[in-house]
Image 1 (cartoon, one colour):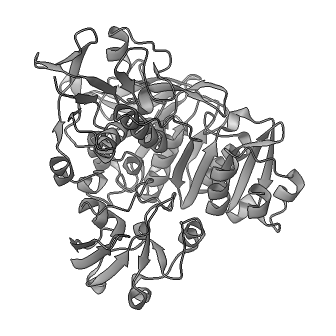
Image 2 (tube, each protein chain N blue to C red):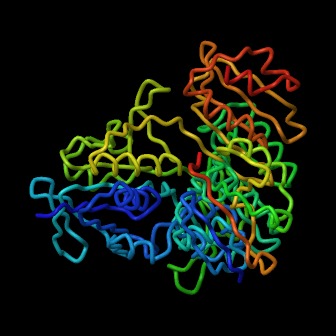
Image 3 (cartoon, one colour):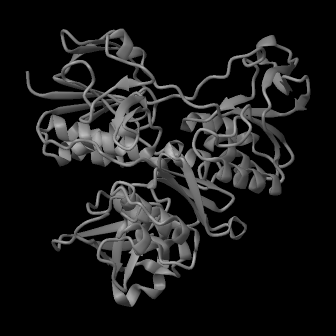
Length: 413
Length: 106
């Protein structure tokens, strides 16, 4: 049969792979199948400008419909794929129809981790991953309403910032002893804790949620949440709840098809899975990382884009091994955080600039080598670090700590 | 609405009717003008939406804020009339604007 690449998942990675295939002059058929009703769209604004009501949904779309038509990419939306048959090289759609492929790309993403406890089925408890999630959540963002947020990661904190801007009462409950504990070091955690407390957020660290209690409605299945109950018995009355407790890679299809999965679908530097002719890209993957010298799962737009390009290149016959330094960003209260590298590798940190000025950076080094930079309103440090980290820069620590010195020459000998 | 002309590095012209409120970057992506990557989706975090604004239009595109100014230094082949197109909002004041695209982004 003619070449046919079928992409499972029409998110950032899936959309990129489809577009890149045509860019690499892939002549075969391309089908992009998504479970959501929307074409590929960007998720970061969901907890930022889109939540604040500043954008129409169409502005989130990565490409206009005309793009897919012109590029001859079949976009199939609102459709789940229920099975991969790797022997016969087909997939099964939810309506039972069977579709053949010559190359398969899994771009299934990482849905929000569900919070399961007594009362978690009550109404007005939300997570935030999709446009539909925000559509449900947005009407609640009204002045003086009481919001309890479970989890102080990027999502929890960005929503806290947005909610404060709308004049809500916000309490954030975090089980770890600091915010953003999975994504940054202690110094930056403390900075963000101070910023949120200054804005009026009631931040409860080292605090576990026990369960939710609800308000009786006429019909039992419409009981709404009325309070979050903490492990020590404290009750936090609320009108609604947002849970931001991480995401889980969508690996069911891959596992059932016998692909190697462990904290994501295992891929190599070409995004190939353990099965011939099957690739995986984006949030759902577990990949080799040269900075870490090991495997990891990344949740970032940049990774989704780059893995999409890598898989497409390989299918189109080009060797383009993936070797990117991870980078991320977060916007809260006009504080623009840009992060490049992996902070957890570090054995020492250097602060450059004064946090009180709201413009500073934290440099993380391992055995003298730069492995990560957290830059707050300091794009110069961020952009330089993007080059310096893969170049294995070994900046002088004392000079780094002195903001009067020239950072460019420090990092890019 | 505003008519924006994008000129690719090889001289290919694209004339676009851009809606008010979009950024120059979004209008390009929406109308399939090649040559603007916008890897970060317009968050002023990547410098891959770099354009050269026709000199007589530069002032009309507005002031460059410190964040864009810093990021612009990392755009390839920065010139006097360089802007990050995700930071310029379309309005009727920009009707007739022409921007040229660099050969490479990032």
